[in-house]
Image 1: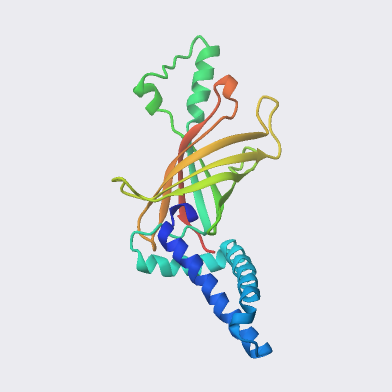
Image 2 (image 1 turned 90 degrees about the horizontal axis):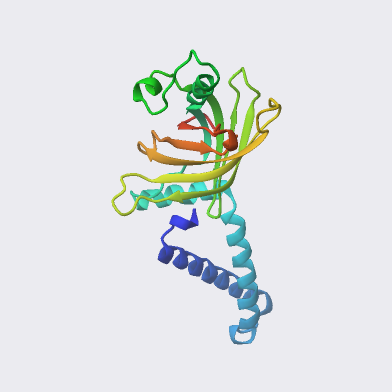
Amino acid sequence: MYRIFDAKLLIRLVIAVYFVFVAIVGAAYFFVTGAPISEIWLRVLGLSTTLSVTALIFFANNVCFFRVVWGLYMKIDKEAYPDISGNWKVELQSNYPVYLAMAEAATDKDTSFDVFSPIDVDKIERKKMSGTAKIKVTFLDVSVKTSFDDGVNPSSESITLVASPIKKVNGTTQHQLTYVYMSKRRDTPSDDDSEHYGAAWIDLTGDANNLVLEGYYWTKRNWRRAGNTAGRITFTRAAD
């Protein structure tokens, strides 16, 4: 999340944390040893640097700490990127049935299907799947882990390889989230991939109390057979 944090504010925060530790460590040295600051200032600065860096690294990777601090930041900046940490329900609408229609038309002379015809494409219902997602956000990282099971095909799970929040700028109307993931299935047919990579580009809509993540995803699954899929993806809040 640091990518969208105001750089000046971030620098001020780091400096403030450092000087807080300097004050605490300096006071502790003075009361314990009784030595004047002029004699122990090098030790104070050294220990303060170590403690402040350790604290910043620890809290920067702590989800609970992030949610508390980011909640306060959102009250100050009304245009701040919302907190998307937590559990989500996920709905997919895949174009896979279009691929099946193309394959059937290619092998059956009695079947016609024109992928360039809106009439032929629009009459095919997209495949729908439901799943769950766990999104974790800290100052240093954003991760999205999803799980799907449509009751017919083997269940699949995906983990984030890289994710990036995008704050609305340059006239865009909403914040966005992009990520690249790797998906795995426990069992797959011989003509399918047990692992594949994909990506998603998602808009954050609604307010902080009624947030919805919706956009598009695409994969490289079976790309040599033109079987790589794409579609719409929607996240809605679930109970944490």
